[in-house]
Image (tube, rainbow, N blue to C red):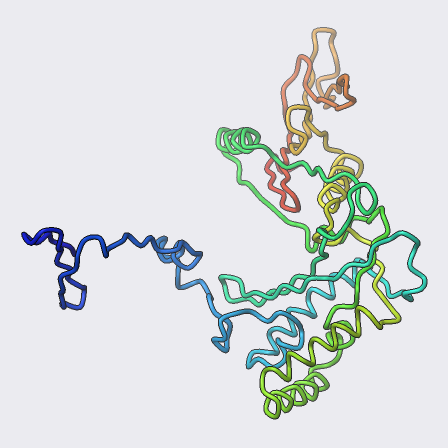
Length: 341
């Protein structure tokens, strides 16, 4: 709290603890606190759900697999790495090839390893490609990926409310890895390549060796070991990873996955992409009783193909009896409709 004194430019400063002092007003400045995720959640009353620090209070998340192994919560980190790696294996995202067998002109880039803890306490590991090291037009193509617009979102929610229908949703697990990569790209072996699939018992032995290294040489010893391991995988390695799927971080991955989502909905699910918003898909079934005496039991919709080849669906002289509306943004999907569809 500040109060101006009668003595020229002096002001009286009273601290929250109760102490006070007098200083010249030119020595004061307004300090704006830095806005962080923690402050925002605390303001919203949701700070109890945030795990803002690593388990060992080191102030930062692990930067690689070896740093994760020496932590007290190492098992949680290992399980997170195994979960991410399982998605790569199931989708056959990579394969190990000899360095000399790389396709001519292709780039070999590092893979980033992102460790974090979600607000609900779940440990998360995400492996990404350093797409900023790739060349446009050579290592990747189209970077545009469609997502539902704000107007499309409002229309979707308004329609759901007006029809009194519940909105459901799903998202694709490691979605990008389900789309093929068109241009060949290679990556250096990540730090966990030879270790993440080992059983916990063997990893515990490796952990004891790393802890012994830290005990004898200190944290600098572990950093030296990690640096030498990174150098061996990037300069002297005989093998690299060939990326076969649209790995997170490659600029064209969003577009590849968007095309996969489009073909899945239109070709396999039989829904129609709208012209107004390409990220909105609909399917309607009509009870058409036309003036020409059509069969009242027939249920059909009329398709009209626009100039750009996009299909519109509407009813002619009939009533919509079944419908399905879908919106998509990246790998998240929300939908509602009648039970039959």
